[in-house]
Amino acid sequence: MGRVPTADEEARFWGLVESAWAMCGPEPAHVRRALVGREPLANDDDDLYALDAWLDRFLAQLRGLCADLSSAELTDMDRVVERKLYDLDRQDIHEHTDGSDDGFLYCRGFIVAAGQEFYNAVLAVPAMAVMDAECEAMCYFFAHLHDERFGDYPDTGSGISRESGGNPDGW
Image 1 (cartoon, rainbow, N blue to C red):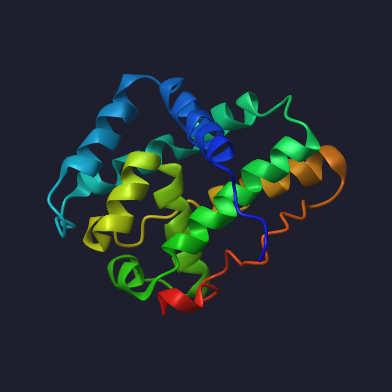
Image 2: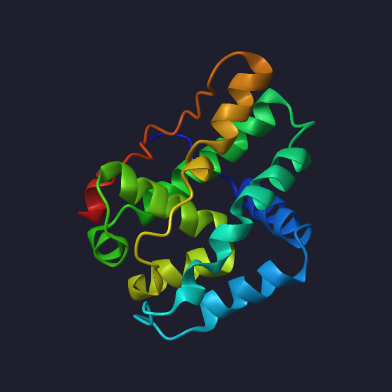
């Protein structure tokens, strides 16, 4: 069996995500609460896509928070993202996000980028997912940082794939 993220690694990852969002100010916090607090299948509201306007700023803040992470730390964070994307790789979630293989990956990236509360809500009730909401950059965020800083992509040692259809139990 491959390497699984530890509870401490997951806590650190979600802490980084929440810190990056907090640095964006109160407006995206309100948008994120509304996203989690809505009724499932309430996908006809333009406010569902309001978080899109904040994703670049969120990612910039996250990049800043990760500026001093070591190779091992970036690998740990990439392993967490990989696992989160893998766990979301399910047919019942795809039915509520749509998209090609790449599109579904990017939708799962949005779910992870939106934070732990939204991630958990979608895992529990796939109808909470937002149709076609995407954050491609989140899917390989830590892998790309690792490559930029250390000249190669990290080996997470997990033995899983974040790519769509990679989780056989989800399909």
